[in-house]
Structure formats: C-alpha cells, structure tokens
Picture 1 (tube, rainbow over the protein chains, first blue to last red):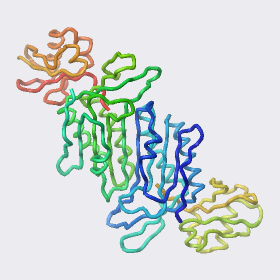
Picture 2 (cartoon, rainbow over the protein chains, first blue to last red):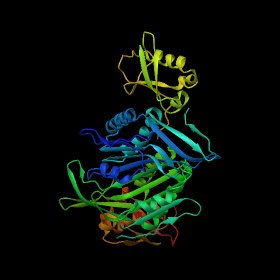
Picture 3 (spheres, helix red, strand yellow):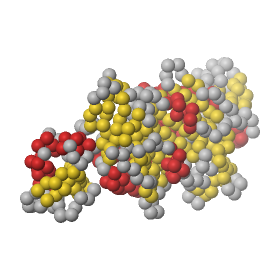
Picture 4 (cartoon, rainbow over the protein chains, first blue to last red):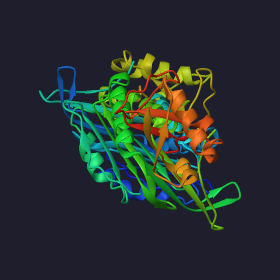
Length: 151
Length: 151
Length: 81
Length: 81
C-alpha cells in the first residue's frame, strides 16, 4: 500500500506536510522554508541503515494510515511553529520501499535565530516516532521480514 | 581578505573542514557524510538575515584567521565525533561577502542513530560562536557598517 | 452496536484483512471495541495490549464513548521516521 | 622582548595595520603583551578587555609565558557562524 498525498499547506501557517511514495527531493522543502528574514535552517534526514549490530537490512518498507498521519504531522508542525518560534516547517515522509542509503523522512525548519530550529528537530522526531500512524517493515538480507515495534 | 583553504580531512577520522570564499555547495558535504551504515543525518545552515528588529541588513562580510580557525574547527569536529558517537562531520564556513539569503556556514553530521547528530549541531554552533577565529562585519541598508561583537 | 475497525501493519497481517466488523455490547467504549476485536480475532490478542484505538483519526482514552458512524482504526505500535 | 602581534577585524581597523611590533619587558606573559599593545596603540584600549591572545593559534591564559618565535594574534570577540 503506497498512498500518496500532495503537500498540504495550512492557511497562513508556514507548514508543509506530505507523504509520498517516491524518493524525497530536498528542493521543494528548501524552497518552502527559505525566507530572507530567517537566519537559520536546520534539517533532519532519516535514512535506511544497512547494519544494526551484526544484522544486515536489505530494505525498509513503510505504510501509513495516510489521512491520520497527515493530520498528526500537521498538528505537530503547527505546535513546533509556536513552541520554537519557527518561521516555517516542512516534513516529508516516504512510504513504500526505501532502499539502503535513501531517506524515509526529511524535516526542514527555519527561523530568525538558530536555537528554535535546532531544538524543534529532536522534539519533532520524538513525537513522530511515538505517535504518528506510520509503520516500518524491515526486510533482512536473509529474506525474513518483520514489522518494527519499538519498546 | 578572503583566504581560502581546501577541505582538510583528518586521518581515519571522518572530519572535513573548509573555509571558502564562494557560495557553499551542499553536495560535497553530503557526499562526505553519507554512509550506508548510518541512519541519520542532521544539518545546520546559517544564513544572512535581512531584518533584525527594524534594522535592515544589506550584507554580511566574514573574515578569519584562517589557519587558527581551521584548526579550531577540526578540533571541535573531532570532539563532536567522540562526544556524540558520530560517523562523520563536515563543516564549511564561507568568508568574504555573504548576501541576504545565502549561507555563511553549513554543518552536516551523520551517525547510526538520530540523537547524536541532533545533539552535536547545537553544541558545535555554540562552540563556533564562542571561540572560532572568524569575524562578521555587518553592512546595513543605510550604508553604515560595524564589526559584530556578541555580548 | 456494529463497529467497523480499520487494521494496519502487523494487525492487518494477523487478521489477514484491512477491516473487521465487530459487534460490541453497550456501553461502547474504546476499551470495549478492543475487547471485541480480541474475541473476534484471537490471533490479535498478543498484539492488542500494545495497540491504541483511534476514533476519527485521533487517539482516545479507554473509557471514550464511541458513537455510531465514527471512523475506528486499530493503531499498532508506530515506527515511522 | 620584541613581539610581533597579528591583528584582525575591529582590532586591525583600529590600528590600521595587520600586524604590530610591541616591545614587552620581562616577564613576557600574555597579559604583558596585551598591556604593551594598549600602550603602543591607545586606540585599541576600549577593545582590549574583550580580546584574547592566541599563541601559536591557541588561546592562552593571562599568565602564559610567551617564548620568542611564537606566533601571536590578538583575537577580538569572534562572531562566526
């Protein structure tokens, strides 16, 4: 299942959220958060990792309850805008197969000063990993696979 | 004064530092920190901001004591590698005139997990702003200019 | 009350279905819906304690009263990012 | 001892020079070099309390003994990033 949603912009809030089933292109996010009155941009990119300890991953596969995940990401982005005095936030999560070395999520945010965006990224990632309706299936090099259920 | 140094890679440490007098290209930093056994990349970009309160900036101009600044950035990057369990760190600082909306500094770091790179960025920026031998001259829209001396 | 519940990821695989109809006796709370799912598809039982119920795309507490016509979704432990 | 000191940014502008030779009486500490700079270029005096001395490209404490042949640099408050 690889649902897809176009980027959703929330009114006057500079928030852009999308779930896509193709490689993530940094450009539209960068264009969105860029602003001559900001002095800082911070970015986080989550990537499919090959080795975890001695275990080799072949690929990850992501699935979402797309309307719920989109709404949750919008709410988290809007909360981050307020809590960290951001100018703009863009979040793109990829669904479907994500090969080794490719990005599953890209978050960019901008603000006048550096502290807000740098603090927003870990907060957003913690919230996303705890609550957003997206699931990852890990396919191992040996051919087995399993849904990842963090503790 | 727009000295320039080629990127300096430190032995087996995956650290890349450069001071350049042209626009910063993200690609070589991205290529440097990319690694199939990392799962997270975090980036910080400092940009020339137009407005500070009601005061309008025309451009910033950076100058460095290049050999000292390069050495300091290398040491900070190496410390961040250890302190935050990073796989790679790349730091590029631009010197000379940096127009509105263009980057004066770009830092990228990668690691197996997200917490290290996300914690390394604010630490590196705090250290750089406190100690690294680089100075910024602010040219205002009105024509005046001054060296920026943070409190 | 008849409740249709959307299933995802591990829950969908266990039930071998993207949605399940569950008959839930009143009072129809979120907890009662989860209980009904376990009765109807026992293979879900090991996973259910780690799951949350989303009503109209928002997480709800165990005692949340579920109305007819709400969209219900069983949310296994998430792992996005 | 004759000490050559590199100047940067605001300090260079105030002194109108990229380097200054200062005669420093013994004991030649970092603090003594900074004192000598203030005597030689009084226009530096308002800036000096905010400056640090770098010896061979590393910051040193006030009582650091400066050797002949070391590279000295006056470092005004930095503002990179």
